[in-house]
Amino acid sequence: MAAAYLPLWRVAASAAFIGVPLSVVSVVGLGHLVPQMAVAMVRAMVQLSILGGLVLAPLMRSSSPTLVFLYVAAMVAVAGQEAASKLAWQ
Image (cartoon, rainbow, N blue to C red):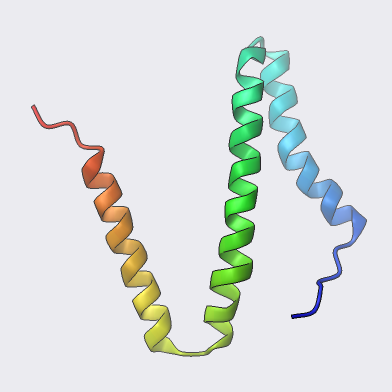
């Protein structure tokens, strides 16, 4: 797999998606949330990069409707299980 070219302006745009919300939170007086938000944003970036680069890109390149359907079905099942586990039964 060849390395992808990533222009500097795209890196700057990505950094803005992290920097702007953190700055706004700091300005409005919620600075105590900045470390938690920064960790959450970096974690989301890593997870989406892995998902997109290692799972979805090869899956879509395969051009197999069956594989895509199985992937979507698995994600729906996982999402349903996760949502059901959050329900509070009284």
